[in-house]
Image 1 (cartoon, one colour):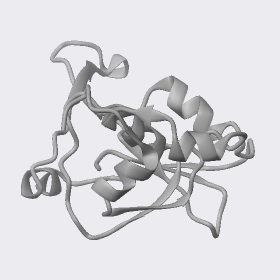
Image 2: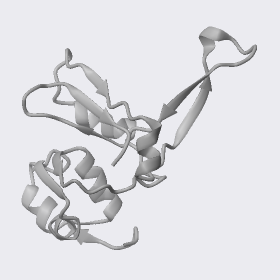
Image 3: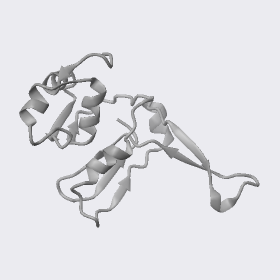
Image 4: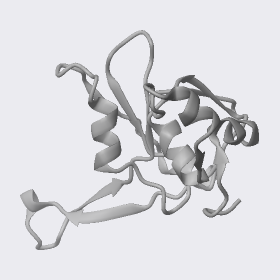
Length: 146
């Protein structure tokens, strides 16, 4: 599939049945019928909307693409309805899982300012792909893989 292919979300769901949308927060709730059944979007936009929604996934490993990141805008939309006292958790993933499933880490290394630069000590940051939310709590869980 290419970034130029446009389908409705209903059609994308049939093409990507491994993802079950439990709560479609990524779609326009004021005009959901149009947003889901009529609006034609790219696969990247469908994936972005999935990321903003509560989803369930079949146990199928799909490698994340190099160019897919959660943006600040995505994060703002995601946390808009969340309480201020919600805790933020990051899913720690050991390198062996990235290697085993061929996930891209898309890491950025930054010198740790606390330790100076003689020799520099680097912190490794891995891009956030998306989030998980669970019906039994109000916390935010960020993940680094698809």
